[in-house]
Length: 138
Image 1 (cartoon, one colour):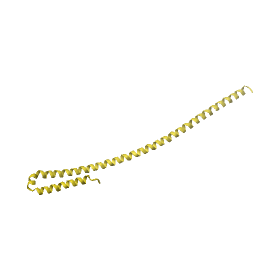
Image 2: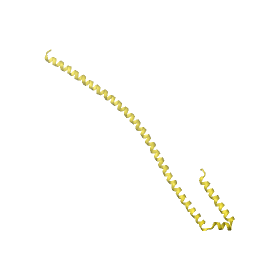
Image 3: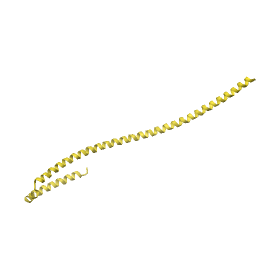
Image 4: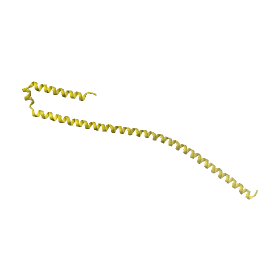
């Protein structure tokens, strides 16, 4: 073979090395890509699981907030109702105090003890009944 045959043989050897190196690089990058893909899939699965847990927690928190808002609205309504009742009771108390200011009960009790005693006892009984009804368990 001559000089040209040696060059041809040498170029084939170089080509074989280049092909071998390229195949090695392709195999290395393919393996690295495969492991990266596997890791990415595992990470995606983990993040999906965490996301579903967070969504469930968010729903529970939304439900709790709605329950608290409903309870707060109900408390506000009850407070308004109690305020109205308090105003009514305050007016009734003012009416009774006005009656006591206009009449001298000591003088009336001395003059007609039976009349005052009966009315005071009846009034006291009504107050006790009212307190008993208001504080009775339902």
